[in-house]
Image (cartoon, rainbow, N blue to C red; front, side):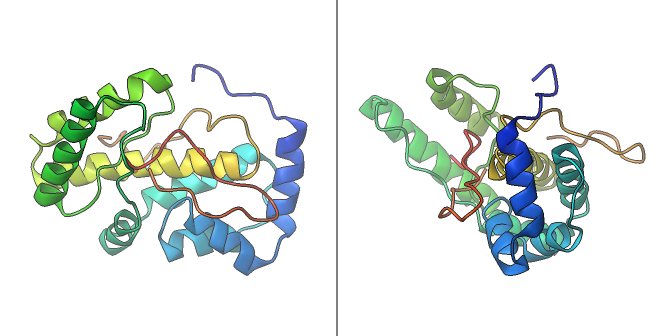
Length: 201
């Protein structure tokens, strides 16, 4: 997105509920955004957040600080989604084969943020992404997957509090932008769903 979206009334209400809900409820919902317990607990423990932007910046910061073990836990929580039902059979077969090749090479589901893709472009984007990233060595691909996971977590947190979009990713002055992860939506809570077009595919 080229501009930060304006804060809607739903976002105000969603942030208030996020800030005041029981800690175990919030942590459970955050685990649907990024399946690492330390990440979820960190965001839960730092409540209340004054703005949605502050919450999203904290989500980014926590994602940057994932250890190798944390990242492994988060990636293990991602799952490859079935190809979209409207796709031609040949495309569905190609996508399943590409996922299998990727998971065989890297040991975890392929993750990619699709926020900027129109629905009709997502299948091609996923297939292209898998084919390009299969050429990476494991360390490079892990860095790419970590950044995609951060983008996904940010989008999911934004949707959890009713924000219309994840907005611009934030960085830290001490870090270069790392080479560039999605997750299946969990059950709803009393304060929202982290539904997102950014899903594990």
